[in-house]
Amino acid sequence: MDLAAAHEGMVTGTVWVADEGGAGLTAIDASTNRVTDTVEGIPGPHDVQAAPDGRTVWSTSGPANLVVKLDASRYSLLGAAVTGASPAHVVLGTDGDKVHVSTAGDGSVSVFAAEQP
Image: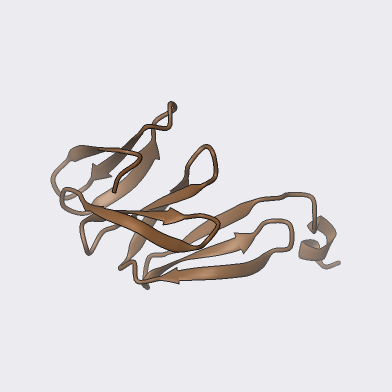
């Protein structure tokens, strides 16, 4: 039995996967289990989080000490901001207006306005 085929259409939305050993984020259509696009040019992406409204996706880039913001429907980079050393996780606030980034290199948390970068 093909498990992927058996579950096709049961789940909808997009699953984002960080290629930590590479330089991109891959979007997978959850209903078909197929890759829809890969956004390149993000060195060593580590963590990925979609905004509650689904319009943006955020990721950290450890080697570049950045947090990046993507347009989830166009699969394009909207901006980036410098974080502390070795950013690890990105967490969006429950109100949707703040983005928190933890950094392993200096033990800090950076806070950004969600409309930035």
